[in-house]
Length: 265
Figure 1 (cartoon, rainbow, N blue to C red):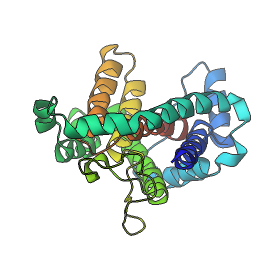
Figure 2: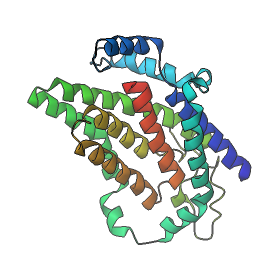
Figure 3: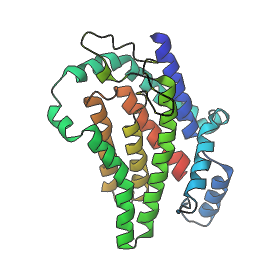
Figure 4: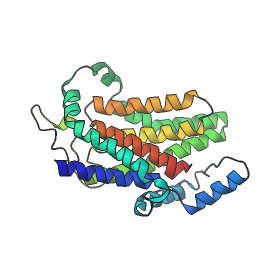
């Protein structure tokens, strides 16, 4: 059990480091030019370059070994990894509580897995449609960046789930040992059969980070964006679809991928 926890924590820490270090020389040069001109850097995005952008994002994410120790990337990696490890240690107790408790029955009836999944998926689509109706290029670009971030995140989360194959809390019966959750889930590859990290949480925080950054001049937007994402992440725990560490890891990765791989600020 201890070995499984350690392996999972190291695995997550490595991927978080990948996202925290996901910068390339081209974006750095472009950012430097904008700073010298007194302008804020904005990554180019359109339907034409969104696929090349995602290829670049994935290259940055998966070449993490060369970036872990650069620019003090180990500091946030260690911090997030430590919190994740602590939550993993508490998962058997918290997982059992939410699986057997009816306290959040009303909340769960609203924030169902299907409802939150659909909400997270259509958020960029709705934002893009609103941008078209309002003829607002910034809103359209924000939607494209959010969509890019979600796809990037889901690629990463699918690989991680296929590696760790963690059981969901709902899979345990009464009296089961919640400690034995790692490398136990059955399912074919490329299906994201595991529980760690949460796909809903990573998608929600990917979108929230893009929207919060792009519209940070409106003070209420970051609170609303991250608040909504937080509700989605918590709902995955309260419905016993995920352990708390799954949701936290998904949130952290979603934030990191959007900030460092997609927005690159």
